[in-house]
Each structure stands twice: as structure tokens, then as C-alpha cells.
Image (cartoon, rainbow over all chains, first blue to last red; front, side):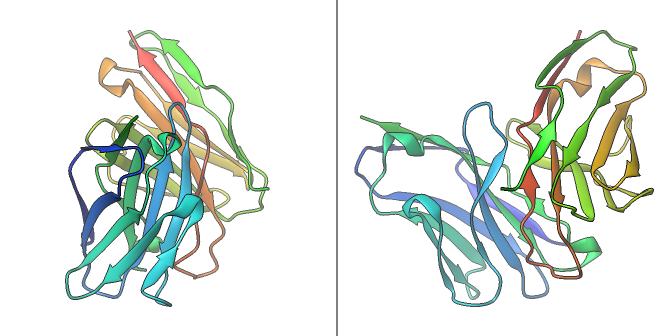
Length: 114
Length: 115
């Protein structure tokens, strides 16, 4: 079975600092990996996804994530945080089986301090 | 632009009431989903549908049912609402012709409070 672990339910950074949100997955077959962002009182919006092409994936709003098979990780980064990045971020995995269902991590709430 | 619309953003219902949550997508997607979102638990799949009149149980189907009579519409039904069903409910859809990496698109969510 596939699963996702997001380390740290809350992450706080200063404006302009590096953002690093961690995601580790388990899957017995090559996975598809996603990062979604949820702003307050809204649904989820796709940030980026990995679908077995380049291991470094660039997304919207300056975010990127690197797929590392050896570490079973797909961490999300952004070089310089903006106040507008404050939101909840979800990592998700689909391994293509069981109807291609997505399994989500528990989410990480990012807070950006001025 | 992709659009998944949930008809009710905020609802307050009494214990034992029957509750309908409606979702419509305008992208002609085959797959539709209902998730429940709770703090610290992420999103958990309640039901999904891969075609009209077809449905499959997700991870937490107990206390819920669904209906998909038309391709664009997927309804979540709480037959007898209970306080532990107070949550945020998210509808989603996806074009899926056997391609695993397709994006799931979400609605804005329905906040349900059961008192």
C-alpha cells in the first residue's frame, strides 16, 4: 500500500528565508507525486507534480520539488518565502494501482513571519 | 478554466438530519471524488466514481452514500448526520483514460457543522 508522511505539521520561516517542506512516501512501484496548496477557506490547488520525467520539478509561485528515489522523498522548496506563501501544503502519491487513487499526507501549515 | 463547484460553502445541520452535498464539474471528467479534510489527518477519500452510476468506496465510507446520475454531478449524502461528521468536505474531479499522473481538480470545499 502507498503512504505519505509529511514531517512537521507546522513550519515557520521569516520572509525571504528558504522554505523546505518535507515529504516521504512509500510505494512498491514507481510513483506519481504531487504537491497541493490550500489557502484559507479555499480548496486545493496543484503546485506541481512528478510523473517520471525530470526529477527536479518546477511549479507555480517559484516552488520546486526534487524526486529522490533512493530516499523515497519529494521535498518542496522555495528559495525566498513571501507573506503570500502562508498556507497549508499537502503532499500526495499515486502509484497507478487501485483506480489511481491519491493518498495524501497530513499536511504542513506554513507560517511566514515579517 | 477548470471548474469544480460545490453548491454550499457553509452548512449547519442537526443530528439525525439527512444532508446533501452537491458538486458539479464542467470539464467532462470521468472521475469524481469526495474527500473529507480534518486537521492533522489530511484528506481522506470517502467515495469515488469513475463513471455515471458507478461508485466505489474509499477509505472512510461509513455513514455516507453517493449518487452520480449525470456525468457532471456527484452528490454526497449523509443519511443521518452525526456530530463526528462535522468537517470540511472537498469534491474533486479528474480526466482519466488510464493515465495515472492526471491532475485532480478540487472545489472550494463545504464546511459542515452538525449540532
